[in-house]
Length: 361
Image (cartoon, rainbow, N blue to C red; front, top):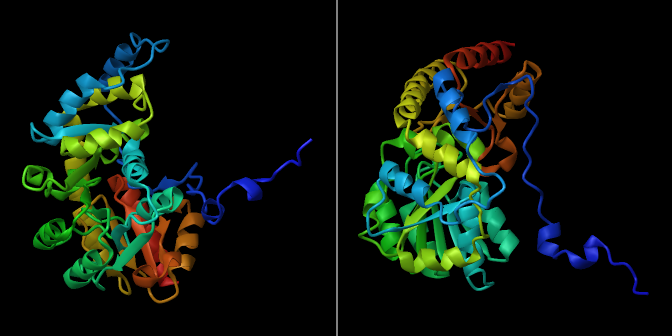
């Protein structure tokens, strides 16, 4: 009988070195840590949705192409007619598809840092080297260092979060154009927060054959559905589609997302409210002595606390049942930084009240 082998024997060292993505428990908290839309649908809309779900055939596999949903997403997202569309179980799965299709130890993944953690995490999982190019102190792109890194490493993929997560800012448009033109591989502009940004590269897809634009419906109030969209040249997307698992968009997501997008006015009202409240919250945070508050075109705000106090403030807020995101442990440009999601006016008021009390001690 063969000796039983352990995970240490069979799991790749690169995987064993990783930490699983951690989501903290949030029961009973004012939850302002995950960039979610804080609003539920109106009761009448919920009743219509539930009535629709009664006819869903859960005993059947879903449409593997999600064809009706793709048609509606093309309309809502203003995808150019000659661009292909690929759907994922959230944008995380789309990132995974892209990198799985290109996985090779010689193929570099490049992104500015700090940015969305899944770019590096998935690159590590599939065995691709990741190159992070530091942002400027104000979290803007450093054009010269980005272009130099592209020339040196010839990355297979460049990821640009627009607006950037976790910093909330939009990168300079001309610099993004320069990066797309300089890249020999694909450039993925990740527009997860497009609903709040009033700026997009979707209309540039016809101009650049190496440009891909990624979207999600999560920030529009549909985070629980896990639905992402990738748009770009069919020559790229048909290759990525080969690593997509069959039926990756389940039937409940397909029906629910199409229904929600057919009620786009409700989602837009919520988005508009969040944008108004973002400005109120920005101004309120800027009025608090000792904080450095960064501009945001997303549904969250990054701010820097007095030196070495970020974790203390985070834990004090948590003890008061207010949950935000502590980014200080990341280090570098994010040292002493916390990130708060824009909640309802009531939630924002509670957060500000508790923060002021903590800082006054």
